[in-house]
Length: 159
Image 1 (spheres, rainbow, N blue to C red):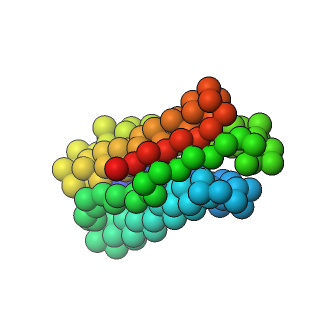
Image 2 (tube, rainbow, N blue to C red; image 1 turned 120 degrees about the horizontal axis):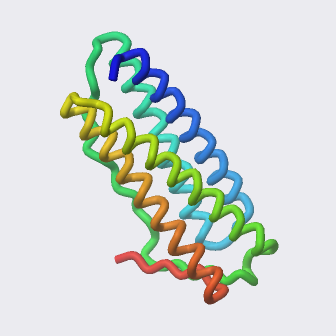
């Protein structure tokens, strides 16, 4: 993939990261329970991705080089239990989680597609790792959606 097309793809990815960060920030404001922590962490993670992509864009423009990214671990609280009754508009919470899952799937696809198109080993590794980050976020949200929908509680147990 040539540099101008790659930079355009990075700009699209950056925009997606900011949309997701805003969604998570808004969701965190709706929740007063421990679930707020998860949405705040997801928002911070998406801003981290945005900053990483900004640094990558700058490096590609100025030096024509990829940057190193070995991943970042999302630290979540060990146990979370949120009952739908604790969330004033629980139907909205399911909708928010569903929308967030869509953003994560879209971001994962963008990064996986970029990884497939970038032949440079460091660039391929970077986009593969970003796709993996987004898959992890999706899995967290999918578990939350299932739990809330099936049991009326969002139960998170993380070692």
